[in-house]
Image (tube, rainbow, N blue to C red):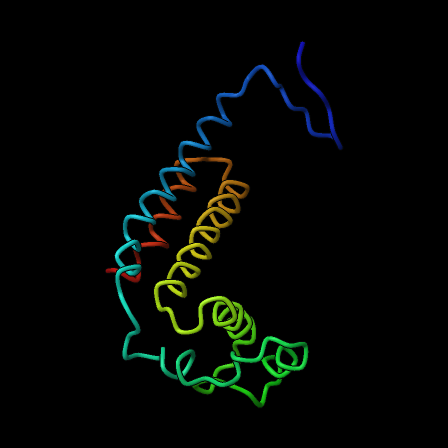
Length: 146
């Protein structure tokens, strides 16, 4: 019998159908999300907040330790919001790509896809149901589009 017990959890290695099924649902969630947000990779900067956050933001141009500490200073708000992790992400993008909008959009797509997986796994952990996790994740992804 191929099985093992780890920290009280019993895992049957011969019954892998749940894993394949879950991977299928996760892949489908990623694929549908990517299809919905892929067109953003063809866009340049938008006239919403890109100039304030990126193209005219001097804070993201300094990725030194002092610059990162500065990004976490509550006095350095962008659009009156405290978003230090966003600023660090933008600073990393700026360090590698300066003002290439496609690179920034690609980073956001990657972060969003990671979020899709994490939320899917969280919902699955709560419900123990792949379909519910998939449908709720899909609803959360497409709500802003409605």
